[in-house]
Image (cartoon, rainbow, N blue to C red; front, side):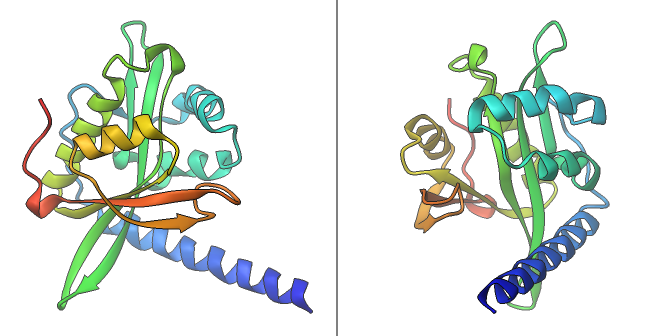
Length: 194
């Protein structure tokens, strides 16, 4: 009986997430691009992106990441080197929240990674800077992310941009792991770090 309940609950959650993704995708139909150093993900970019993803996180969410270039292509940022090889990516999903009788668009970073050979060279900073700028221009109100509490370099980068630790969550960044939920309020965003 427990197994059946768990299966039903899992199916309902998956359906809810699919509906939220559809609403989020519809909410950015008029999205305008302001990309300079990045581009949006194309289907042919996926093998390189998935390699970077696996190198950084070990895998597990390839199916979800593979769907995002179609659903959220405008908010799937990719950065390439001079040889046109992908060296980093940042993908968001969009969902809406109704607050004070108005609709707020919230962007959540689903996955963000840089090729190991380019860590420390400003690739992550460029991805974050350009994506934040574009999301703000498209009237996204909040950027949210989840990061493991022991990922000091990423936490440092996010804090440099003004993200605030909201609380600690369990099992979002992997089974048995703790992570911070961090947010950046774009209405009060004061600009980029020097």
